[in-house]
Amino acid sequence: MANYLIIGGDGKEYGPVTDEELRKWIGEGRLNAQSLAKAESDAEFRPLAQFPEFADTYAQPPATIAPPAGAADFLERDYELDLGGCIGRGWELVKNNFGLLFVGTLLYLLIEGAAGGLASIPAIGPLFSIANFICSGPLMGGVFYLFMRVNRGEPTEVGEIFSGFRRAFGQLFLGVLVPGLLVGLCMVPFIVMFIIKLIPLLGQLQHLHPGTPLDPSTIDALKSVLFATLPVALVCAIPATYLSVCWKFTLPLIVDKQMDFGAAMKASWKMVNKHWWQVFGLVILISLVNVAGLCACCVGLLFSIPVGFAALMIAYETIFNAEKS
Image 1 (tube, rainbow, N blue to C red):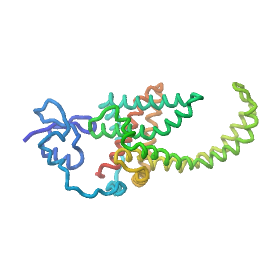
Image 2 (cartoon, rainbow, N blue to C red):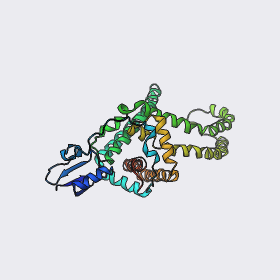
Image 3 (tube, rainbow, N blue to C red):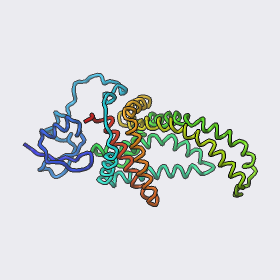
């Protein structure tokens, strides 16, 4: 009986295991056709799909009519998020695949930074702002897809961050636009009240020459406007935060399961609301990790942001692709 060594989704080597154990892992969904393995006598790892002895495991069943994406069986599952475990496993994933995930994240940040810088140019800035807005969803979806594939132990490369443009460009664009508009609507009362309070000061501000410091009375008036509208902003932030967390996995669902944006929003909403506070807690933890990276002379963000992406995608796998243990 042959024994095999396996590269898990966390990048670590496991084994040796027998072919029976390996088949059991495949059946449990812990391994797939692209998971890397080798027999003890082999020199290099290769995808399990290339092993003739496991061809029957991946044999296609008779053709059937596939159920629509919105009826996916994961909607009936339950889950538990280990918040610290997501961060810890995210760190391990980045550490074990540092070159790939660091370069992928850096490339994403450079593209976003360049787009933001070009958007500030008076003549052509608006064009770059529009282009960045259109491309942000597909680009973010590609980043998520890169981290998904690495987490699953599937072969991938840095160029995967552009996969959103070919896999689901329009749906990923709508997956950013529609939730963004709905979340933005929550802030309309604050915006309206702020403008109403600010109107009496516009006359004073218009007469100021560029570079002229504000006089104390104008500063006091602006502070008064801010303090008067702050309670409204905080109240509006409650539904905005709730909706943002509910739709946190819209883009991963679109790029991974090829769902349209409406079905992805509904699926994310339903699954997140099973344990909303757990997902919210993970979002807060990821934010704190990035704050720590920001405090490290901002350079730390180059390390904390990939960990945040990894932790979020590990949570995605727990919620949408794994049965509750």
